Length: 385
Image (cartoon, rainbow, N blue to C red; front, side, top):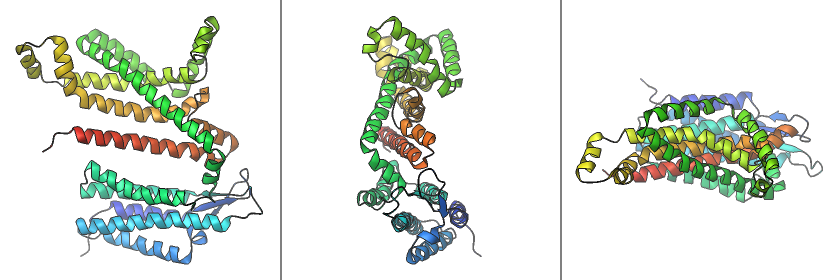
Protein backbone atom coordinates (compact mmCIF):
# COMPACT_ATOMS: atom_id res chain seq x y z
CA UNK A 1 0.00 0.00 0.00
CA UNK A 2 1.31 3.40 -0.99
CA UNK A 3 2.01 5.80 1.84
CA UNK A 4 2.83 9.50 1.64
CA UNK A 5 6.31 9.91 3.13
CA UNK A 6 6.54 13.67 2.74
CA UNK A 7 3.39 15.80 2.95
CA UNK A 8 5.20 19.08 2.34
CA UNK A 9 5.91 18.51 -1.33
CA UNK A 10 2.37 17.46 -2.39
CA UNK A 11 0.86 20.35 -0.44
CA UNK A 12 3.17 22.87 -2.12
CA UNK A 13 2.58 21.26 -5.52
CA UNK A 14 -1.16 21.45 -4.94
CA UNK A 15 -0.93 25.14 -4.04
CA UNK A 16 1.07 25.82 -7.19
CA UNK A 17 -1.40 23.90 -9.36
CA UNK A 18 -4.34 25.72 -7.79
CA UNK A 19 -2.62 29.04 -8.49
CA UNK A 20 -2.07 28.07 -12.13
CA UNK A 21 -5.72 27.09 -12.50
CA UNK A 22 -7.32 30.10 -10.80
CA UNK A 23 -4.90 33.04 -11.11
CA UNK A 24 -3.12 34.91 -13.85
CA UNK A 25 0.46 33.95 -14.63
CA UNK A 26 1.12 37.21 -16.48
CA UNK A 27 -0.77 40.49 -16.56
CA UNK A 28 -0.92 42.68 -19.68
CA UNK A 29 -2.11 46.27 -19.78
CA UNK A 30 -1.99 48.96 -22.51
CA UNK A 31 -0.35 51.35 -20.01
CA UNK A 32 0.61 51.67 -16.37
CA UNK A 33 -2.64 53.30 -15.25
CA UNK A 34 -5.15 50.79 -16.65
CA UNK A 35 -5.50 47.53 -14.66
CA UNK A 36 -3.88 44.62 -16.44
CA UNK A 37 -5.70 41.65 -17.94
CA UNK A 38 -4.70 38.40 -16.20
CA UNK A 39 -3.43 35.70 -18.52
CA UNK A 40 -3.23 32.05 -17.40
CA UNK A 41 -0.08 30.00 -17.77
CA UNK A 42 -1.40 27.88 -20.63
CA UNK A 43 -2.19 31.05 -22.61
CA UNK A 44 1.38 32.42 -22.52
CA UNK A 45 3.53 29.27 -22.38
CA UNK A 46 4.38 27.24 -25.43
CA UNK A 47 2.73 23.79 -25.77
CA UNK A 48 6.05 22.12 -25.01
CA UNK A 49 6.52 24.19 -21.84
CA UNK A 50 2.97 23.49 -20.66
CA UNK A 51 3.33 19.74 -21.22
CA UNK A 52 6.73 19.66 -19.50
CA UNK A 53 5.38 21.55 -16.49
CA UNK A 54 2.42 19.16 -16.21
CA UNK A 55 4.76 16.15 -16.31
CA UNK A 56 7.00 17.70 -13.66
CA UNK A 57 4.01 18.42 -11.42
CA UNK A 58 2.92 14.78 -11.61
CA UNK A 59 6.50 13.68 -10.99
CA UNK A 60 6.82 15.88 -7.91
CA UNK A 61 3.59 14.43 -6.54
CA UNK A 62 4.94 10.93 -7.16
CA UNK A 63 8.20 11.59 -5.29
CA UNK A 64 6.18 12.13 -2.11
CA UNK A 65 5.54 8.37 -2.05
CA UNK A 66 9.20 7.39 -2.47
CA UNK A 67 11.47 6.36 0.37
CA UNK A 68 13.65 9.24 1.52
CA UNK A 69 17.22 8.91 0.39
CA UNK A 70 19.97 10.40 -1.69
CA UNK A 71 18.54 9.26 -5.02
CA UNK A 72 15.08 10.56 -4.16
CA UNK A 73 16.59 13.88 -3.09
CA UNK A 74 18.51 14.18 -6.36
CA UNK A 75 15.41 13.38 -8.42
CA UNK A 76 13.28 15.85 -6.44
CA UNK A 77 15.90 18.57 -6.62
CA UNK A 78 16.31 18.09 -10.37
CA UNK A 79 12.55 18.28 -10.88
CA UNK A 80 12.28 21.44 -8.80
CA UNK A 81 15.17 23.04 -10.66
CA UNK A 82 13.65 22.15 -14.04
CA UNK A 83 10.30 23.56 -12.91
CA UNK A 84 11.97 26.83 -11.90
CA UNK A 85 13.69 27.18 -15.27
CA UNK A 86 10.49 26.36 -17.14
CA UNK A 87 8.31 28.93 -15.36
CA UNK A 88 11.00 31.57 -15.92
CA UNK A 89 11.19 30.60 -19.59
CA UNK A 90 7.39 30.72 -19.86
CA UNK A 91 7.33 34.21 -18.34
CA UNK A 92 10.09 35.33 -20.71
CA UNK A 93 8.61 33.91 -23.90
CA UNK A 94 5.12 35.04 -22.93
CA UNK A 95 6.23 38.64 -22.34
CA UNK A 96 8.07 38.69 -25.66
CA UNK A 97 4.97 37.41 -27.47
CA UNK A 98 2.82 40.11 -25.85
CA UNK A 99 5.25 42.93 -26.68
CA UNK A 100 3.98 45.29 -29.39
CA UNK A 101 6.29 47.98 -30.82
CA UNK A 102 3.23 50.01 -31.83
CA UNK A 103 2.16 50.30 -28.17
CA UNK A 104 5.34 51.33 -26.31
CA UNK A 105 3.41 52.17 -23.13
CA UNK A 106 2.08 48.62 -22.78
CA UNK A 107 3.11 46.72 -19.67
CA UNK A 108 3.50 42.98 -19.13
CA UNK A 109 3.85 42.11 -15.46
CA UNK A 110 4.33 38.92 -13.52
CA UNK A 111 1.01 37.76 -12.11
CA UNK A 112 0.09 36.29 -8.73
CA UNK A 113 0.30 32.73 -10.05
CA UNK A 114 3.96 33.25 -10.95
CA UNK A 115 4.80 34.55 -7.46
CA UNK A 116 2.90 31.74 -5.73
CA UNK A 117 4.68 29.11 -7.83
CA UNK A 118 8.01 30.78 -7.07
CA UNK A 119 7.23 30.84 -3.34
CA UNK A 120 6.19 27.17 -3.42
CA UNK A 121 9.44 26.25 -5.18
CA UNK A 122 11.50 28.19 -2.63
CA UNK A 123 9.77 26.40 0.27
CA UNK A 124 10.22 23.06 -1.50
CA UNK A 125 13.97 23.70 -1.88
CA UNK A 126 14.19 24.60 1.83
CA UNK A 127 12.31 21.44 2.80
CA UNK A 128 14.57 19.37 0.53
CA UNK A 129 17.69 20.83 2.16
CA UNK A 130 16.30 20.03 5.61
CA UNK A 131 15.31 16.49 4.61
CA UNK A 132 18.80 15.87 3.22
CA UNK A 133 20.45 17.35 6.31
CA UNK A 134 22.65 19.63 4.24
CA UNK A 135 25.29 21.67 6.01
CA UNK A 136 25.35 25.46 5.79
CA UNK A 137 28.03 25.38 3.10
CA UNK A 138 26.08 22.80 1.09
CA UNK A 139 22.95 24.96 1.31
CA UNK A 140 24.95 27.93 0.11
CA UNK A 141 26.22 25.91 -2.83
CA UNK A 142 22.65 24.84 -3.61
CA UNK A 143 21.52 28.47 -3.59
CA UNK A 144 24.32 29.42 -5.98
CA UNK A 145 23.40 26.57 -8.31
CA UNK A 146 19.75 27.67 -8.31
CA UNK A 147 20.38 31.40 -8.72
CA UNK A 148 23.18 31.22 -11.30
CA UNK A 149 20.95 30.27 -14.27
CA UNK A 150 18.39 32.88 -13.21
CA UNK A 151 21.05 35.59 -13.21
CA UNK A 152 22.38 34.29 -16.51
CA UNK A 153 18.94 34.45 -18.11
CA UNK A 154 18.51 38.02 -16.90
CA UNK A 155 21.92 39.06 -18.23
CA UNK A 156 21.11 37.51 -21.61
CA UNK A 157 18.00 39.69 -21.84
CA UNK A 158 15.36 36.99 -21.46
CA UNK A 159 13.24 39.20 -19.20
CA UNK A 160 13.71 42.52 -21.02
CA UNK A 161 10.09 42.60 -22.18
CA UNK A 162 8.76 42.41 -18.62
CA UNK A 163 7.66 45.65 -17.00
CA UNK A 164 9.93 45.04 -14.01
CA UNK A 165 13.00 44.97 -16.28
CA UNK A 166 11.79 48.08 -18.10
CA UNK A 167 11.41 49.93 -14.80
CA UNK A 168 14.96 48.94 -13.88
CA UNK A 169 16.44 50.07 -17.21
CA UNK A 170 14.71 53.43 -16.91
CA UNK A 171 16.18 53.92 -13.42
CA UNK A 172 19.46 52.00 -13.49
CA UNK A 173 21.53 54.98 -12.24
CA UNK A 174 19.00 55.79 -9.53
CA UNK A 175 18.89 52.11 -8.58
CA UNK A 176 22.67 52.01 -8.05
CA UNK A 177 22.48 55.10 -5.84
CA UNK A 178 19.56 53.61 -3.90
CA UNK A 179 21.54 50.41 -3.32
CA UNK A 180 24.51 52.37 -1.99
CA UNK A 181 22.30 54.45 0.30
CA UNK A 182 20.44 51.39 1.62
CA UNK A 183 23.68 49.55 2.36
CA UNK A 184 25.08 52.68 4.02
CA UNK A 185 22.04 53.01 6.29
CA UNK A 186 22.27 49.36 7.33
CA UNK A 187 26.05 49.39 7.86
CA UNK A 188 26.05 52.70 9.76
CA UNK A 189 23.17 51.55 11.96
CA UNK A 190 24.89 48.25 12.77
CA UNK A 191 28.18 49.99 13.57
CA UNK A 192 26.63 52.64 15.82
CA UNK A 193 24.30 50.16 17.51
CA UNK A 194 27.18 47.77 18.22
CA UNK A 195 29.31 50.61 19.59
CA UNK A 196 26.50 51.57 21.98
CA UNK A 197 24.68 48.29 22.58
CA UNK A 198 27.59 46.07 23.64
CA UNK A 199 28.93 48.53 26.28
CA UNK A 200 25.39 49.12 27.54
CA UNK A 201 24.88 45.36 27.78
CA UNK A 202 28.16 44.95 29.71
CA UNK A 203 27.17 47.72 32.11
CA UNK A 204 23.66 46.28 32.52
CA UNK A 205 25.14 42.88 33.40
CA UNK A 206 27.01 44.38 36.33
CA UNK A 207 24.26 46.74 37.54
CA UNK A 208 20.82 45.11 37.96
CA UNK A 209 18.99 48.39 38.61
CA UNK A 210 20.39 49.95 35.47
CA UNK A 211 19.45 46.80 33.56
CA UNK A 212 15.79 47.03 34.62
CA UNK A 213 15.52 50.71 33.68
CA UNK A 214 17.39 50.26 30.40
CA UNK A 215 15.21 47.40 29.23
CA UNK A 216 12.09 49.33 30.24
CA UNK A 217 13.13 52.22 27.98
CA UNK A 218 14.22 50.00 25.09
CA UNK A 219 11.02 47.96 25.26
CA UNK A 220 8.96 51.15 25.04
CA UNK A 221 10.93 52.22 21.96
CA UNK A 222 10.14 48.89 20.29
CA UNK A 223 6.40 49.47 20.77
CA UNK A 224 6.47 52.76 18.84
CA UNK A 225 5.47 52.25 15.18
CA UNK A 226 8.37 52.88 12.81
CA UNK A 227 6.54 55.59 10.85
CA UNK A 228 5.72 57.42 14.08
CA UNK A 229 9.30 57.24 15.33
CA UNK A 230 10.67 58.54 12.03
CA UNK A 231 8.15 61.36 12.18
CA UNK A 232 9.05 62.23 15.77
CA UNK A 233 12.62 62.90 14.68
CA UNK A 234 11.65 65.69 12.28
CA UNK A 235 10.65 68.35 14.81
CA UNK A 236 13.57 68.17 17.29
CA UNK A 237 16.24 67.90 14.60
CA UNK A 238 14.71 70.76 12.59
CA UNK A 239 14.80 72.95 15.71
CA UNK A 240 18.42 72.01 16.40
CA UNK A 241 19.43 72.79 12.82
CA UNK A 242 17.75 76.20 13.05
CA UNK A 243 19.33 76.99 16.41
CA UNK A 244 22.77 75.80 15.34
CA UNK A 245 23.24 76.34 11.58
CA UNK A 246 26.63 74.62 11.64
CA UNK A 247 24.78 71.34 12.23
CA UNK A 248 23.42 71.57 8.69
CA UNK A 249 26.96 71.35 7.35
CA UNK A 250 27.20 67.98 9.12
CA UNK A 251 24.03 66.79 7.40
CA UNK A 252 21.84 67.05 10.50
CA UNK A 253 18.34 68.27 9.62
CA UNK A 254 14.71 67.37 10.12
CA UNK A 255 14.68 65.03 7.16
CA UNK A 256 17.31 62.91 5.49
CA UNK A 257 19.94 60.54 6.79
CA UNK A 258 20.36 61.89 10.33
CA UNK A 259 16.83 61.28 11.65
CA UNK A 260 16.71 57.95 9.85
CA UNK A 261 19.93 56.76 11.50
CA UNK A 262 18.81 57.90 14.95
CA UNK A 263 15.50 56.04 14.64
CA UNK A 264 17.13 52.92 13.19
CA UNK A 265 19.73 52.85 15.98
CA UNK A 266 16.96 53.20 18.59
CA UNK A 267 15.28 50.11 17.17
CA UNK A 268 18.57 48.23 16.91
CA UNK A 269 19.66 48.69 20.52
CA UNK A 270 17.26 46.23 22.17
CA UNK A 271 18.39 43.07 20.29
CA UNK A 272 22.06 43.89 20.82
CA UNK A 273 21.75 44.83 24.49
CA UNK A 274 19.54 41.83 25.22
CA UNK A 275 21.86 39.36 23.49
CA UNK A 276 24.93 40.88 25.13
CA UNK A 277 23.34 40.49 28.56
CA UNK A 278 22.16 36.97 27.74
CA UNK A 279 25.58 35.93 26.45
CA UNK A 280 27.47 37.31 29.43
CA UNK A 281 25.00 35.82 31.91
CA UNK A 282 25.51 32.42 30.27
CA UNK A 283 29.24 32.39 30.95
CA UNK A 284 29.76 29.63 33.56
CA UNK A 285 30.63 30.91 37.02
CA UNK A 286 33.27 28.19 37.30
CA UNK A 287 35.06 29.66 34.29
CA UNK A 288 35.10 33.10 35.92
CA UNK A 289 36.37 31.61 39.18
CA UNK A 290 39.12 29.78 37.32
CA UNK A 291 40.17 33.00 35.62
CA UNK A 292 40.23 34.82 38.95
CA UNK A 293 42.24 32.01 40.46
CA UNK A 294 44.83 32.30 37.70
CA UNK A 295 45.41 35.95 38.65
CA UNK A 296 43.48 37.68 35.85
CA UNK A 297 42.04 41.11 36.58
CA UNK A 298 38.30 41.89 35.97
CA UNK A 299 39.09 43.77 32.77
CA UNK A 300 41.15 40.88 31.44
CA UNK A 301 38.42 38.40 32.34
CA UNK A 302 35.89 40.47 30.43
CA UNK A 303 38.00 40.88 27.28
CA UNK A 304 39.72 37.48 27.22
CA UNK A 305 37.11 35.15 28.72
CA UNK A 306 33.56 36.51 29.00
CA UNK A 307 33.23 38.36 25.69
CA UNK A 308 34.77 35.56 23.57
CA UNK A 309 32.39 33.05 25.16
CA UNK A 310 29.42 35.39 24.69
CA UNK A 311 30.41 36.33 21.13
CA UNK A 312 28.14 33.78 19.36
CA UNK A 313 25.10 35.15 21.20
CA UNK A 314 26.13 38.75 20.52
CA UNK A 315 26.66 37.85 16.85
CA UNK A 316 23.13 36.44 16.75
CA UNK A 317 21.87 39.77 18.07
CA UNK A 318 23.79 41.63 15.38
CA UNK A 319 22.26 39.32 12.81
CA UNK A 320 18.77 40.26 14.00
CA UNK A 321 19.72 43.95 13.93
CA UNK A 322 20.96 43.86 10.34
CA UNK A 323 17.98 41.90 8.97
CA UNK A 324 15.58 44.15 10.90
CA UNK A 325 17.31 47.32 9.71
CA UNK A 326 17.21 46.24 6.06
CA UNK A 327 13.42 46.18 6.30
CA UNK A 328 13.01 49.31 8.42
CA UNK A 329 15.28 51.31 6.11
CA UNK A 330 12.55 51.01 3.47
CA UNK A 331 10.21 53.03 5.69
CA UNK A 332 12.97 55.61 6.25
CA UNK A 333 12.46 56.77 2.66
CA UNK A 334 9.37 58.61 3.92
CA UNK A 335 11.63 61.18 5.58
CA UNK A 336 14.02 61.52 2.66
CA UNK A 337 16.61 58.91 3.66
CA UNK A 338 16.57 57.31 0.22
CA UNK A 339 17.31 53.67 -0.37
CA UNK A 340 15.01 51.10 -1.91
CA UNK A 341 12.05 52.57 -0.06
CA UNK A 342 12.02 55.46 -2.53
CA UNK A 343 10.96 53.03 -5.29
CA UNK A 344 8.32 51.46 -3.05
CA UNK A 345 6.59 54.72 -2.19
CA UNK A 346 6.94 56.12 -5.69
CA UNK A 347 5.29 52.99 -7.03
CA UNK A 348 2.49 53.20 -4.50
CA UNK A 349 1.88 56.83 -5.42
CA UNK A 350 1.86 56.07 -9.16
CA UNK A 351 -0.12 52.81 -8.90
CA UNK A 352 2.86 51.03 -10.46
CA UNK A 353 3.27 47.58 -8.91
CA UNK A 354 6.45 46.82 -10.83
CA UNK A 355 8.08 49.96 -9.45
CA UNK A 356 7.14 48.77 -5.97
CA UNK A 357 8.70 45.39 -6.74
CA UNK A 358 11.85 47.17 -7.93
CA UNK A 359 12.31 48.24 -4.31
CA UNK A 360 10.91 45.18 -2.56
CA UNK A 361 12.77 42.41 -4.41
CA UNK A 362 16.30 43.85 -3.86
CA UNK A 363 15.42 44.42 -0.20
CA UNK A 364 14.48 40.76 0.19
CA UNK A 365 17.58 39.59 -1.67
CA UNK A 366 19.81 41.84 0.45
CA UNK A 367 18.26 40.42 3.63
CA UNK A 368 18.73 36.86 2.38
CA UNK A 369 22.35 37.57 1.43
CA UNK A 370 23.13 39.01 4.88
CA UNK A 371 21.36 36.15 6.63
CA UNK A 372 23.33 33.63 4.57
CA UNK A 373 26.59 35.42 5.36
CA UNK A 374 25.85 35.23 9.08
CA UNK A 375 24.93 31.55 8.76
CA UNK A 376 28.27 30.83 7.11
CA UNK A 377 30.09 32.88 9.75
CA UNK A 378 28.30 31.03 12.55
CA UNK A 379 29.05 27.67 10.92
CA UNK A 380 32.75 28.52 10.63
CA UNK A 381 32.78 29.45 14.31
CA UNK A 382 31.34 26.14 15.47
CA UNK A 383 33.80 23.65 16.96
CA UNK A 384 34.75 20.84 14.62
CA UNK A 385 33.70 17.38 15.67
